[in-house]
Amino acid sequence: MNINLRVYNDYKIYHDARFVIEQAGFLGDQYVSVIPMLNEDPVLTNNQEVVCEEPFNLQEVARSASGFIKRIDETAQKLDASVTDLRRVVLNESTLTNFSVALVNFRKFSEEAVGTVTNINLVINSNSAQVAVAVSNLVFFSQELTMLADSAQNVLNTNGTQITAATKNIETSTETINSLLADVQSLRPRVLLALCYKTSSCRQTCRPSPIISQLPPAI
Image (cartoon, rainbow, N blue to C red; front, top):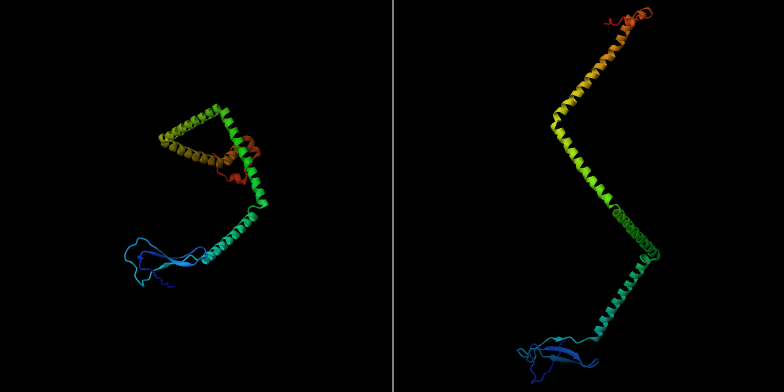
């Protein structure tokens, strides 16, 4: 929209001046207000165009305020629905009862824990000397066990060859004894039969069976 202004020649308007449409009072007439700034050259001449700032529009402000109030009302409704859901799901009677029971149990547990710690402190304070002796004995036993393990390792390192030879000799002796026992076990029936046959009392009552007669003569 273009607005034509008539300005007296006595008034010089510079190019940096502000042109604003204002209103006389709350419901008064509107007019163009020229606001000087730095008064820098050049000076405006006839038929020259400038930009004028828009006037204050009460209806537009009212419409904007109405939309803003509507958005606030929608936000309040959503907030109220969220609070209602929160009360229904989280802050219901059952949940609050369970929460109260949990707090009571936690309090009892805390009291029992404090009592247990107190009893432990009393036991430690009343038996501090015995505990110190037990710890000292345990440390001494650990040191002795370490020394015993070191001694055993030194014995093994020093006499490893002899121990291996002794073990091998034991195995060889065991094999020899087993072989001798097997030989004695195989000769036992023959020796008994031979002894029985050679005695005078056995000669009258015992007679060699066909199986015995097939055996080689006893030595």
